[in-house]
Amino acid sequence: MRALVDLSPVLTELGARFAASGFSAHLVGGSVRDALLSARATGVARPAGDLDVTTDARPEQTLEVLRGWASSTWNTGIAFGTVGAEVGGERLEITTFRADRYDRESRNPEVAWGTSLVGDLARRDFTVNAMAVSLGPDRTVTDPFGGLGDLLAGRLRTPGAAVDSFADDPLRMLRAVRFVAQLGLTPDEEVVAAMTAMSAELGRITPERVQHELSRTLLNPAPRAALELFVDTGLADVVLPELSALRMEIDEHHQHKDVYVHSLTVLDRAIALETADPAAESPDLVLRLAALLHDIGKPATRRHEARGRVSFHHHEVVGAKLVRKRLTALRYPKDVVEAVSRLTFLHLRFHGYGRGEWTDSAVRRYVTDAGDLLPRLHKLVRSDCTTRNRRRAAALAATYDALEERIAVLSAAEDLARIRPDLDGNRIMELLGIGPGPEVGRAWRVLKELRVERGPLDPSEAEAALLEWWSRVAE
Image (cartoon, rainbow, N blue to C red):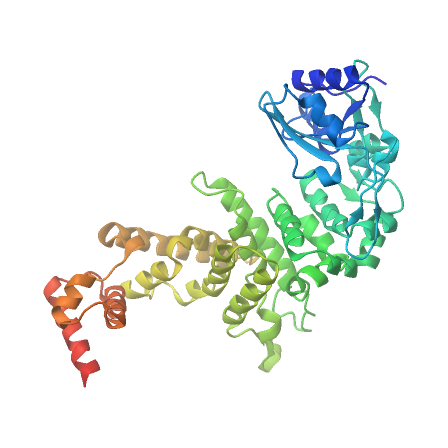
């Protein structure tokens, strides 16, 4: 059949160059899938982003085809048959037909060149990624496994047996989770059954690759259904067991909400607030991780109290430690780990505000402790209010509005975002008669704490307070 994809001039010329050298070339994978998806929305199926091409040419032959035409090429993937190139502002990855076998222990393939396009498509992860469009003049579509039908039906299947596909590469199970969020596809029963039976195989995958897929899932506009699949199949037990642990048995008196469902709802609400804020980073991985994980300290701190009540005292403290440990194990960057842990630690602080009983000192401390995470903390705290009691929800929202107003007033007067002591290091050393050293740092921290507690001080007040502290230390 004729292709449904409108090829760019670069792809058209690429196909012509391969044909002139006696080879075939085909657009494949996500490039075809996404182009067909765009056609449903716009009526035009035009590939965008990085373009994946497969060919019967070997890598060294591909380099010859590109010589003198591509503005640049790179060979970082050449051991796996892939040559990268940039032409006319478009990035291409051109890979020789593959017929790999996997050792099913390390996930590393035994690279073998293939001899046919269909054989190459058969080794791909899902049918929606196993379609190809010829770059020759006929623009033939090759779809041996029904990928287009699956795409139109919103169905996720593997080209062959799902258990074989996931045994070859267990990371494909996490890709299935991501495609639920990214493409809105629903895995068929065979895929779900294989994911459930083989979830433990994820232990073969490096933490970096696991983290990459988990993050890509969370960064989609609506990841909830994907996360439910992640938990229901047992994949989360391997990757993020603290999330699965939130599915605690609800006590017989129903004195607390289902923490797992609550956490997913908080994530939904946080994403809504994030996307509605034109000044916010979006998608915001830190906020989304914090929303999902803010209550992971609850299972370890649950206590059954009198009259059927349940408590989770200090779950924010325990949760912050668990967040730091898990995200570190998943090889998240240190700044992400610390930010998510800090938000987890602070997410309950607001509940001590009552009806506005906090002093200005307490408001300053809230702002100072949050630092540059304050906008995210605002969204997290607001999202954490999932009560169905409308009056209570409205009261909590109004109270937080009042807190934000107080923060704004104090910020305008005192520049809360950059709270510093009223004396600098040079003046501290001059007053105390000391040189650079740890004592200066201790004095600086004392003055900063005083600044948080009492607000801006006149220099004379700050100097008197510093000298009083120093006299006590010297005794």
